[in-house]
Length: 117
Image (tube, rainbow, N blue to C red; front, side, top):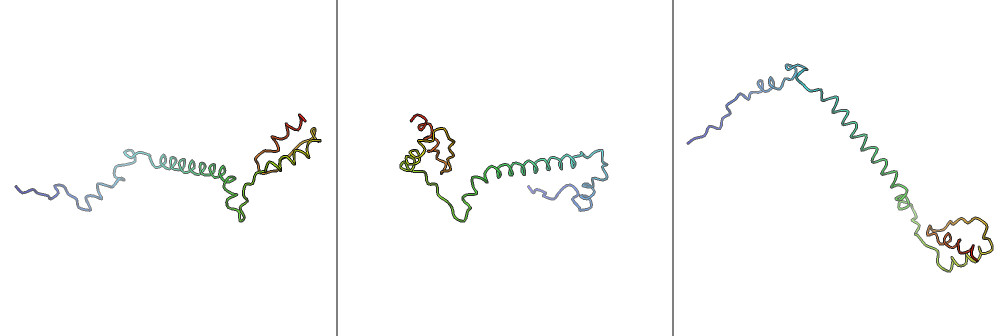
């Protein structure tokens, strides 16, 4: 049994262009999706830009030290250094203390002990 594989409908270019001619349909048959689509696209792009800006703004302070020409290592204060500073501060219990160290806070923790002495 032989099957006929030839198309049964007209696929000539003129017939296809006539079928795809949306102007002949009129504007009442087409959805007004171009304005809605462009607003949605602008919203998505704007949301992505704002999200990337916020993430970048949060990460820059943490990542910028790694991009310095000379990267400074984290070196915490030793116990001997902390004891020496605390011994110097023993007579100054009522004054303010500013810890400009490595950020480990050892002198800040030493301060309450000085008030008891």
